[in-house]
Image (cartoon, rainbow, N blue to C red; front, side, top):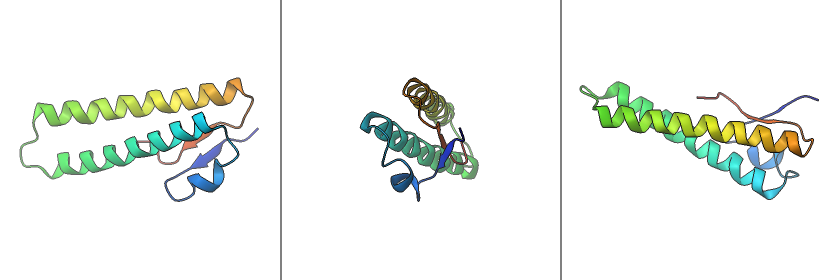
Length: 89
């Protein structure tokens, strides 16, 4: 069984047959992924990033990873193809 790889552009069509709770987690993971990219970009452009900025970025990364693991666990339980967020973090 091959995984289903999704990104912000194709997620709606690729996960439409999945249960609603998995769909919501996928959208949440995609939101976290966008936040990580934005914060990472701001962090790198900032002349003096603060520890608080780094802490927020680290928290988003950890929550994204846990959400991705939860999606896989739920898919495994229901014997569905795993949904993998394209590009990770």
